[in-house]
Image (cartoon, rainbow, N blue to C red):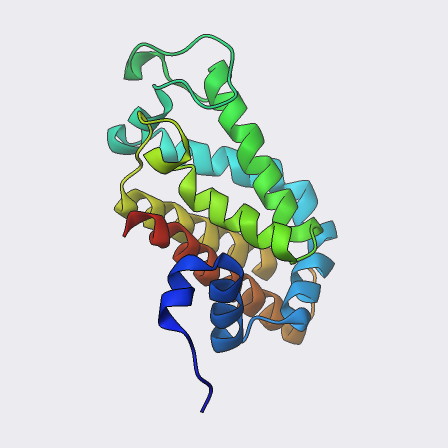
Length: 189
């Protein structure tokens, strides 16, 4: 039986990631499957980002989080929900971030820096990352990751991959998003 230091799971992000990856079975073959899918996903990232923001802007409870000034954004800030739309410069700024997120998933090494990046994805949606005005409730983060999971699995299903590779790639993305979900949820404890 393997011994796990439970306290270290809460304090050491790499230790936590390694435990999750080993327990779920997310390993080098999964990373390879995700990265091999890059030629199929890359051209669809803009579509996935647009669909994600179409959904986020369709609900007041999710759209309202785009009213406060986003970290790193220097343009005009919307005053209220009536000013928020898919073409607002702050939404375009956020869309660029999601675009980069998808690119990171398919093009980056899954090393210590990637673990830090995945952890920061959770942290930036809370006041812990520096902007006290941004606190996306956990239910909305769960909904977002669920939406992204569905879209990624559909993109894999619609690709020209053979059945075995399709299943392997879908499983790889599923495992990765469960890890991502944990690295989001840890900032809500």
